[in-house]
Structure formats: structure tokens, C-alpha cells
Image (cartoon, one colour):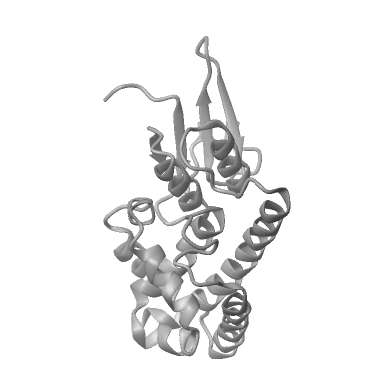
Length: 224
């Protein structure tokens, strides 16, 4: 394999890593990927990661020096600005700002979804399920005819929500039906994202089993 100038430092389950991987794949940009164990972070990683989190993007520059970029949306926007391929944001400043707001909304939505998925007692699970569904209802009112958030063009908001919806494809209809019921636009959007090649390839072939193992290891209600 030829050398690449970009290395994505990753964890197999991290949804924030998936954002960056999706953008790289959409841009058809060659990159290397290194997975680390977040429970036993290597010294070289801690030396270059200011917050000790993934993803990191290592950028090999001319002359062989290396720059490191951290924070998932900073990485995604750097890739959007520096790599070839269709832009991930609209060119219009107002439309771009609006979508950046929905990206932030996506991060808050992920937090509610994650707490629901990992809940170990019913009160928390019910509260976080309700909070997550409320956010989906807000999205239902915002979405157009699709198939993506901004219509025909796949963009940054899609990259953010794809990793959230992926969980519910793994868990199946018994969990997802109540949450996505009577949300036809969100449901169609979720389906379109699940079929996008970049979304499929952003995770390993063992992702589903890894995620189920994670739920079992945390004694989550949904593990059963």
C-alpha cells in the first residue's frame, strides 16, 4: 500500500471517530487508521492528544513534519476545506451556519441516545428515551423530502446523525419501533443513511458484535 499523508487515530466504537471516517470516505481521501485501547491509552497517544480523546488526525506535511488535529468537528471541517470532493456544507453562509447549528444539536442528541442505550435502571432509560424521541420530533419538523438532511446532497449533518442511527439498526425493531414511530421523515432519513457506502465503511465488520458486547459489559438494560 502506498503511504498516505493522513492517519486517523481511532477506537472501533467511537461515534465521533465515525464522523471523521465518513468525511474521509466521502472525499475519497486515502488514509491510515490506528485503533487504540481507550482503557489503556498508549504513551505516544497521550503525548499528542491534549484531551486524551479520539479521534485525532495526524497530518504529514512537506518535509516530513507532522501536525495533529483534535476534536471531531474540527477534523471534519479541516478535511472538508482541504480535500477534494463535494463540499459537506452549503456554500451560502446562512445555510452553512444553520447546518452547523444542527451539527451541535446532533451532539446533544447523541448524548441522550448514549445515556438511553447504556442505562442500567428503568427510570433513567425511560427519561432518556423520552428526551431522545423529543429531539427526533424536532428533526421531523425540520426535514424536507430528503433523502438527506439538505435534500439530495449528503452533508455534514448526515455524517453526524449516521453514527447515532446506527445503534438502532443493530438493536432492531423491538427497541426502535416505539422511538421512531410516527416519524416518517426521520425514518426515511435513517434508512437512507444506513445504505450510504461511506456510512457502512466507517466502521469495521465486527462493529455490531463489539457494540453488543459493550452493552453486556456495562450491564445495560438493552443488553437483554
